[in-house]
Image (cartoon, rainbow, N blue to C red; front, top):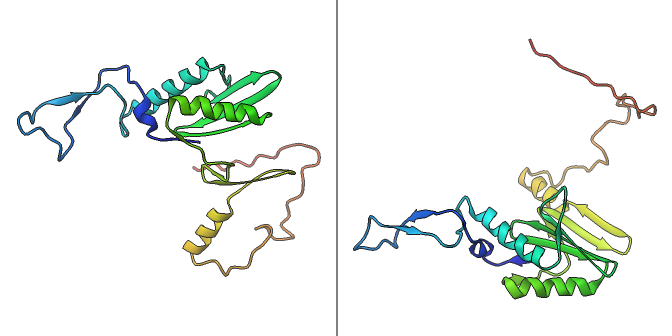
Length: 184
């Protein structure tokens, strides 16, 4: 899901003044500034204000915040699990029960203007392929773009960049050899 105009939902708690934007100056009062009631894109407090608004809404709707990752929200209902991951104004979610997903979409659309993107195909530059056998994350498009950018689309692919007789063997004993380079 994507939240439309996410930062405009954020209530700022500090007193913030901004100058009149170019082209929108009041000709009678050019020296006046505006006191903000809501967050704006580009304002340093905007992401924090938006997150506070969103997290309060989720916590009020039966979610609990993740202990290690505070952008992860979890809701358990009748033995079923719904997990919500927030990245600024992008939200990914999944559940052990499709009904919980539909309920989550409704809870979010009651408060915010949302667009549902359907099954996740891309997130933070990663491609996501979902199938019955599992979820596969990859960057095939990104690699293709890099190869095109550097005129290497005709390069011969290799399974590994290492030569076959590279001299490195598996560490079967589990010991780690650390090499330090100290410059004078």
